[in-house]
Length: 138
Image (cartoon, rainbow, N blue to C red):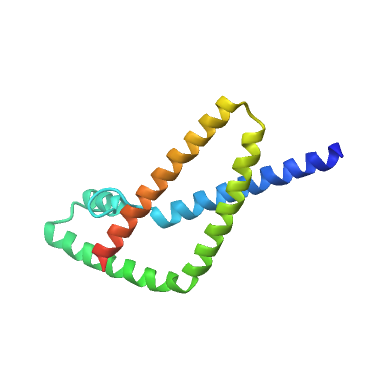
């Protein structure tokens, strides 16, 4: 009996870590380069290092905007799969969160809930920002 509990705990820990890794990787891939000047810090850095003129910067911006549109088209067919995976990852995350709460004191459980809610608010704010940016790009 104790062994099966240990295996279950190990499985949950691995599932939790895999979900976290998947979420982190997807988040990094989907949101890379979204900070300054329309969300392209690497382009800003490149322009600065190359000492681009304003005319050259307009050309660079135009080329990269077109490229982003092309990439969106390439990703469009698999976006539904990514959304499905995200939903499944959330189910695993919810289950893991509830199990973790059962392993801590009520005070710790409240803090764990608070930490999770804070993370979700940040993710929602990022998603809204990404959505607003997509609408501006189109």
